[in-house]
Length: 121
Image (cartoon, rainbow, N blue to C red; front, top):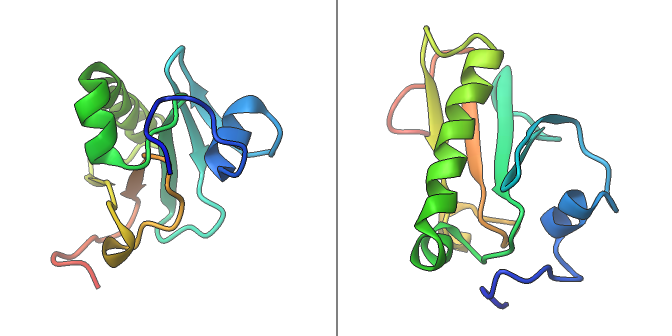
């Protein structure tokens, strides 16, 4: 899969960005889209994705560190909107199949609203 920043026809998240696939969008900026996970692992489980396609967080960071910063800013705003910023939340980037990445478009999971023990399951 490419990491060129160009939309990929077979990428679920690229299709969400383009509006081809519906999602419960909670925030959107010029560079990011944040939407509810369809299989939430916590009361707050929102994915924050870049509008440009890069395979994973490492590829995105190498290509455009400013967009990684945008993702983290939006993650904080998602937590504040869901009122989990005061009690605590987690931002997770899964990179590679061994880490649980199933959609190969960089994305951050924002999790909160329940105890989040470490290390995770």
